[in-house]
Amino acid sequence: MLIRIVRMTFKPEKTEEFLEIFRSSKDKIRAFEGCNHVELLQDLHQPNIYSTYSLWDSEAHLNNYRSSELFGQVWPATKTLFADKPETWSYTQLEV
Image (cartoon, rainbow, N blue to C red; front, top):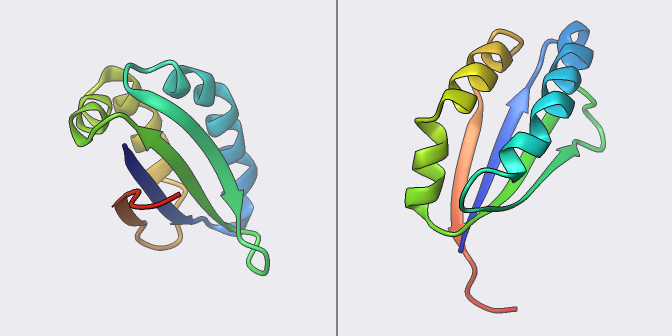
């Protein structure tokens, strides 16, 4: 199981546009082969900072998504709204 976290800082005036992109694509991402979960988190003190938290069967499944047509639509549209470079982390779960 791969845990993927992507932290994104948006231009404050662009957050609603990002939320529209996320809402319209979240079910498609969740249905992508190897994706077990996707959720959106908002920073408690900086409302223009969001993170996606997703669970994937493997890094190969994540990479398949990242090279998919769906990602090719979602990510470029999202990137244009950034106020800062996104940060990403990938983890494996050791203990529950």
